[in-house]
Length: 224
Image (cartoon, rainbow, N blue to C red; front, side):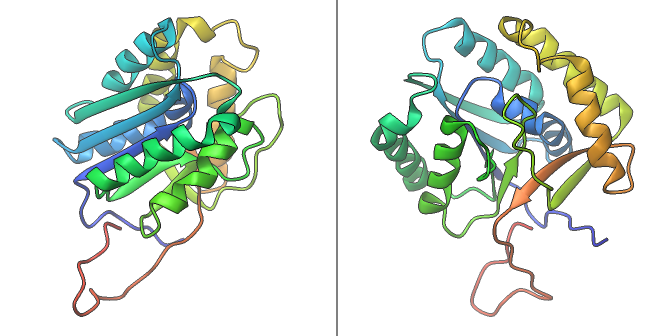
């Protein structure tokens, strides 16, 4: 299995339909990347939850999951479960981000996600960020929509334990959900770890990835 390390990682863009999507799907990756690249610029856009307890939880959680990073968080007020009906506002928010940023890495929901809000956001991402490396995170939930990941980030026991502790600490409003518990998070991480010869891992989906043996003439090297 080939291991690829970032050549440069100055800017990360995080996209989520709901408060808690990003840390659940990519919390371990955020902890690892922000510690490996201190001072990285992290921008997060969440489509729902503005003005509620969920927004307060999200801002505190993302700050905890991005140690040492320069963090900018935007939480919108689209109605939960109705993002497809508010497609234009969501798309305009993405287009606005694109006009102001050139991220080295985009992290968002997976395109096969069965939740309508997640899926709608995922379908929008490549229309705004056409030439960017985009990783789609997975969230284990009732819909049973997990697909086989194509990218893995191995996690050590301490990092996974830290991720789970931070999820429990910052998302108290979600503790009554049947899928929000330590066994769910650790169980999926163990399965993904088996699949990449690690103890634990997070899995991601990539739609398009360009490999180059050397920088192409007349162009900047890619972030990965």
